[in-house]
Amino acid sequence: MNNPPLRVSKGAQLWNKAKKIIPGGNQLLSKRSERFVPDIWPAYYSRAKGCEIWGVEGEHYFDFAGMGVGSCILGYANDEVDAAVMDAIRNGSMSTLNSPEEIELAERLLALNPWSGMVRFSRAGGEACAIAVRIARAAAGRNKVAFCGYHGWHDWYISSNLSDGANLDDQLLPGLSSRGIARGLKGSALPFRYNQLNELEKIIAENPGEIGVIIMEPARDHMPEPGFLEGIRKLADKIGAVLIFDEVTSGFVLNLGGVHATLGVLPDIAVYGKALGNGYPITAVVGTASVMDHAQETFISSTFWTERIGFTAALKAIEVMEKTKAQEKMIVQGRKIAEIWRKAAAANGLKIHTEGLDPHVHLVIENDPNLEIHTLLTQEMLRLGYLYSPSMRCNLAYTDDILAGFAEATDKSFSVVGAAVKAGNVRSLLQSSMPASTGFKRLT
Picture 1 (cartoon, helix red, strand yellow):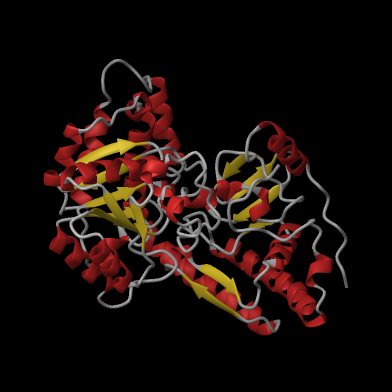
Picture 2 (tube, rainbow, N blue to C red):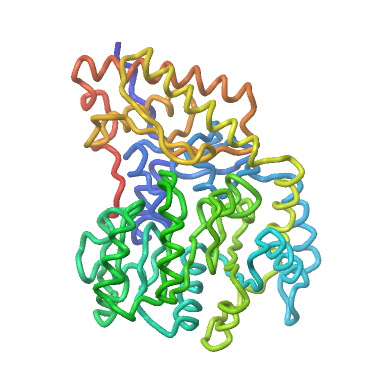
């Protein structure tokens, strides 16, 4: 039996308006409606609390679509973090003088990363990675960067596609355009794939004495194979390159700090973001004193990196994480969600597997090359009041009752999807004009 069409909300209508007056529709690719259910995704919110979101018309959803792209592991509008931020606002979030919370947060991060000696701060993940690469190049005295994973929108990274337009396709987001990037950067950023140590060895061999920086995500969709990270560390030491671990996504997920601590391999620089401020913009570049001190030999400076709110939010967020044992709880949640998916898939004849760190568990529906099955599942979850994505981001706001409701909705939605797959009519059940898309493309 086919369900009646979903109502096109005001939020969905606003998205169509936004695409006409904001290039690309918004400021973040990951929040585009086309990545979920084109045409009907609610797109905008009026209020968020815990793991609940209210749309612009007051409609209510439980958020199982990423929790602010992984930035709110304590839940939206956490009372303790917000109270600390409100105090900072009342006392002035910006002045001619510096915020003492900056020093407090630096000391806190150094204690959580005992291998490190200095910290720089910024407000966004991409710019923090750009800062880290700038410092590392200054320290190494060489310009070429070998990288693995996604590291933001800045020229140093996107320039990789000047050499080959598909260079970044295996690094999370396919189809990223290099238009607007100076062609003089061609060949300065060289990609290798995760768990493929031989590819990094080849890059080093083909660029003797030129690789000064190696930057990578220590873990994302997969854990490293035995010896992979250790091999990266040895290669960096052998050629005198600075090793950067981009922990913008993975930081504060498995422990109070970077996943590298769990994996037992130390970088020269670690970059933290997302969960660090529980939704407030704050990122940190943490590194050894010998490397970080080279920041004084290059120009890195910005007015709003000095405002007080980010430092205050991060200090309180770390305190709450430690007090609540947030990471331990999220690991348990992720395992429960993976089991919910497995049971629902088995009951409805769907073939799936899961990937990723437990708190960032990711659902893969097999034999879905065009994302039609994924789009139908997202559509049916939306019908039941759940914002859904196959990339889960666990958080303290998920209670046992909320997870039970998610399990029930998942089973109902998988039932619709399983029947559609069996009948061969998945596409005809989509209310959207097209399936979801994963990569970058022009919208208008």
